[in-house]
Image (cartoon, rainbow, N blue to C red; front, side):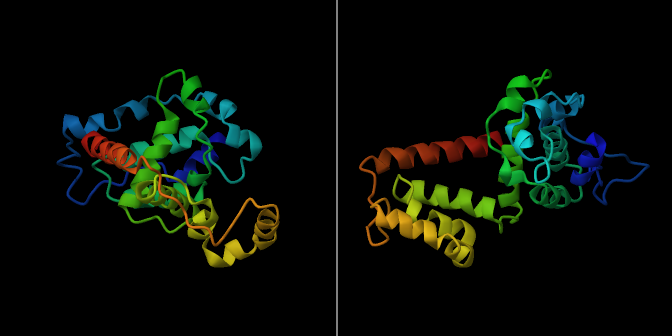
Length: 212
């Protein structure tokens, strides 16, 4: 079962057309360093046994080591089609990760599977593969923090799932309004420390660019 699930991320490197059997696939040390640690995965399964999402339901989420393999392929500069692996992991539940960090804490090789999952999420945006609930939810949170410094939870679900799917939650919304926990007419306040928050966001963006 382990290898059958691993196959879902299409775990083979398809080299760019510029590479041939005669010339090989030359790569700079800098490009190699971007993914070399993920090559150390020994498929021991420690990350799987500690994964809270897998414990809840394995049907809609792959084993963490499968995401590690996918990130290794996506980060490889020799790859002809990183989108192939990204589409596969999105379909395999990339955005359903609980981000509990248990897989990273228990990995005997220190590979940081949770970090690999976060990198895959970032890559989906770079390759414009962000038309799904998980990506829209992440972007909605980012936009709220950037513009007001706090989450506008009354609109978060609409931004994530769209009006049609959100309408199915109308009964819950009405109950929240009835007990005073939700006011659709209320204006979302701007955090008084928005300048500080904005500076933190920009610093995080700069750090992310430098790391890339």
